[in-house]
Image 1 (cartoon, rainbow, N blue to C red):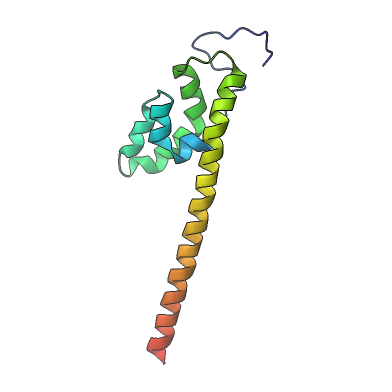
Image 2: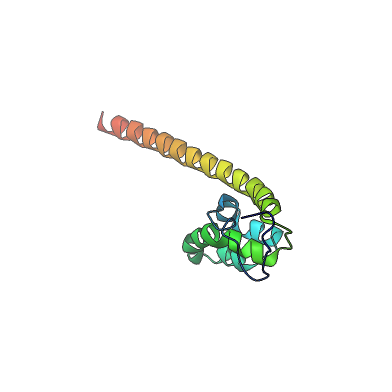
Length: 117
């Protein structure tokens, strides 16, 4: 988006659209912090399994519409911090799940081996 281009209220500039890891991982917390409350639907059990993906995909658009950002650069700087934190959280969660599966799998394997001996 050109710096001189006027921002039309109610519209979402092309530079704003895209995936937001912060909205995906921190969904309802991110929503309250960005004054957009649709992510609160992530508090509904089972529904949240799908809604977190909607938050990740639509979060930037919701935050843009609910915020008072002067320009796309300011918006991007704010959301980049959320997105970085969300991506780190996602990677940590994946590592924990893999380690958990490995440890539980090893324990079950050892138990089965001892039972067969």
